[in-house]
Structures are given as C-alpha cells and as structure tokens.
Image (cartoon, rainbow over all chains, first blue to last red; front, side, top):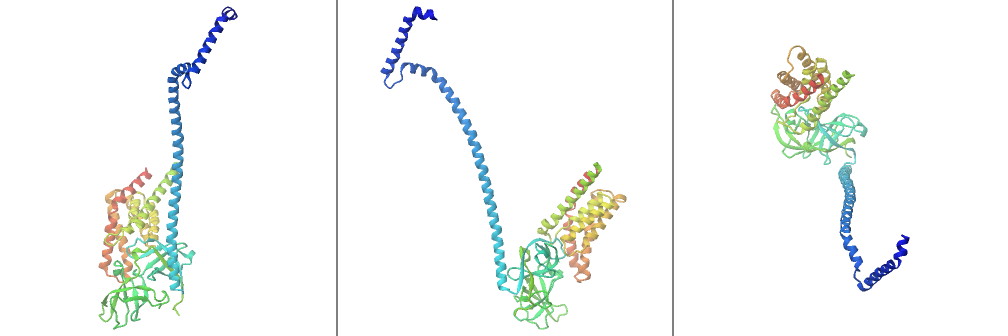
Amino acid sequence: MKDFFKNKGIKVAVALAAVLIVILMSTFLSAGRSNLFANIFRTVTSPFESGLSSVADYLEGVYDYMYGFDKLKAENEELKAKIADMEKAVRQAKISNDENDRLRELVNLQVKRPHLVFEDALVISWNSSNWSSTFVINKGSSSGVELYDSVITESEALVGQIIEVGATTSVVRTVVDAETSIGALIDRTGISGVASGEFTLMGENRLKLSFLPSGSDLINGDTVLTSGKGEVFPQDLVIGTIVSTQKEESGLNWYGIISPAAELSKLTQVFVIKEYKLSEE
Amino acid sequence: MTYTRHKIKRVLLHIILLLVLYILQTSVFTRLRLFGVYPMLLPLAVVGIGLFEEGLWGGIWGIAAGVLCDISMADSFLLFTVTLTVIGFFTGFFSEFIIARGFPSFFVLSVISLILIALLQMFKYLVFYKVDFMLLSKVALYQTLYSAIFIIPVYYPVRRVTRRTRA
C-alpha cells in the first residue's frame, strides 16, 4: 500500500483532484437540478427505495388497520355500553313514570276519599280454576293488608275482597265469584238489596242483585253501590250497572243482573282499602 | 355414590317437570281459555309419574303436584293435595300389578282422573250452592275435554323423564 502511494502518489492525487473538480463543476453547473452523481445514485437506488417504500407503506397500512380496528372495536364496545345504559335509563324512566301515574291515581283517590286508607297493589296472576274467580296481588300482611279488606280500582269500582293473606301476596275474590255477597243499594232510588255472585253468571262476568223489596223500581242502567251494611265493604263504592231485570222463580219479586264497573279481565293495578270509617260524615 | 346421584337426578327431573307444567297451567293457559275454561296439566303428570314409577313415588309426586294445584286455585282447599296423592298412589299400584305401562293405560287413567277431579270440583256447587247439575256438568265436560288434549304432549316428556331415571 505504501509502495503504491510512493510510486503512484502523484497520479492518484491528480485523479482525485480531477474527480473533485468534475463533481464541483457538475454541482455548480447544475444550478437547481440534480447533479450527475446524484442522478446516477438515485437512478440506481430508486427501484429499491420504491420497493422498500411500498413495503413500508404496506406495513404502515397493516399497522394502521390493526390499530384502527382495535380503536374502532373499543369505540364500538364503548358505544354499545352507552346504548345499554341509555336503554336501561329509558326502562327505568318508564317504570318511574308508571309508578308516578299509580301514585298520582292514589293521591287523587285519597283526596276524593279521605276517610279511606289505601294500599296500591299489582295483579300478579289469575287463578287457573274454572270454578271460581280469584286473583293474586303483590301485597300482603307486610304491607298491612288484612283478611276481608275491600279491593277497588282507581275509579272506585269494587273489584272484590281479600280472602287469603300471605306475607307478600294476597288472594282477591272478585265480585262475580259464586261466594261473593255484598250489601248493595240502587243509587237512583236508595233501595237496598244484596249483590251476589252466582256460578251461572260467573262465566259471563255478571252478578245478581236480589232480595229487593216487592214493587221495587229497578231499570236497566241503574248504578248499584255498596250500602256499607254488614260492615264488610265501605259505603258508596260502585259495584256496577243493571243490564237486565228478571223475575224470581217465585214470580213475586224482580232481580237485576249487574255488569261490574271494574273491568276484571283488564285489571293490572288495584287498591286495597286497609281502613275506613263505616259512614262518611 | 352412583345410586345417590341417580336418585338426586331423578328427583330434580321430576321437580323440573312439575314446575314447567305448573307454570304452563297457571301462567300460560290462564290466558288461553277454550269454551270458557282452562285446562289442567298437573293431574296428567301425576298419572304419568305414577304409571312409570311405583305406587309410593306416585303418591309422593301426587302430594307435590296437589300442593301446587291448591296454591294456584284459591277455591280448592286441600282438594287437589288429597286427590292427586290418591291418584298417584293408585296409578302406581295398578301399573305394578294390573295394567301395562304404556300409552293406552296412560290415556284411560288420565281421562278417569280428569273426570274424578271435575266431579269433586262440582260437588261443592251442587250441594252447597244448589247450582244446576247440567250447567256444572257442562263446565266439567269442557274442562275434561280441554285437559285431555294435553294427554299426548304430557305423556312423552313424562315417559322420557321416568325412563331416563329408571335406566
């Protein structure tokens, strides 16, 4: 190596100087354009650079996709959770709204009937017997419900009477059940009688008004109320309306068929009368 | 150990069967009246269990089904508990010694049981409320016919449960 430079030192130096001069001249002469060497270098390397760039772009795309997918997935999960929360809030709002309506009805009822103490309850099931008409409500002795308490609707229509009390549920016998018997009076005339369920009428959702004094004035459309006699049911609850009048078997007296004021087949909410005064003063 | 597990499985399957029929009877078919009546499913299950098990087990499951029926019907104070116990016991007893364990026996015993139950339900109204016999008979007939529709749908699950547990 030393010999090479000793022997040909001047020639090498001249060649390097020439190359430098060419480079410098090329650079000065190009004036804003790529110089010769840069052109050559870039021409040679550009396919590789292009290939590498494509690979890099592809990998970047894959990374972006992966990262973006994860991000979208996370965002999707987050949105789903938000929707679930909102749906829950809507459901809760509906429940609260329903409860609000029920409490408003209870307040209205309480205002109209200050001498009665109510407990609102929901119908949870109807019994499956073909021989009686009863249903179960979601309130029992823990809510102060007692045996033989009266049960009404928000419009003060008599539904029936509690015949069985559990801790959290009670059984209500409806007004059309064959074992029901209620002291009644006709609102228009004030004449008293007994409204009672009959097996023959139970299937038609009707009950009978009988034991009316002979010669009683009874017409279709008459409203029948509780008389309060017998101290079982409070006074002036609406039992129903007379839909037909017929003669007793003896042929001496008339009796009426009552259509209950409470729509028994559509009951969802009822009110149990826990306390009442025997007559309004 | 296997025997105990087998017994537990058998009890659990019978409990599930009775509960499913109870839910159907009290929550589903109370919305599906036919001729103004509801069907009765639990007595059919008791007949089936009694038929494929022995008398004692028929009686035991009869008590369980009877209690469920009495719970679901406020007017039937212990009527079903007593009746279904008797039906379960005698069905099991007959199937051990007299009758074959198959669908014809199940059908006949189910119909007899349904008629017996309807007659017992009629009794109170006939004697204490003097309700017209023909009217009561009509309700009893409709109840028996509507319930009888479920003899086949109840037979196969009951047979499957009892056969699986007897195997």
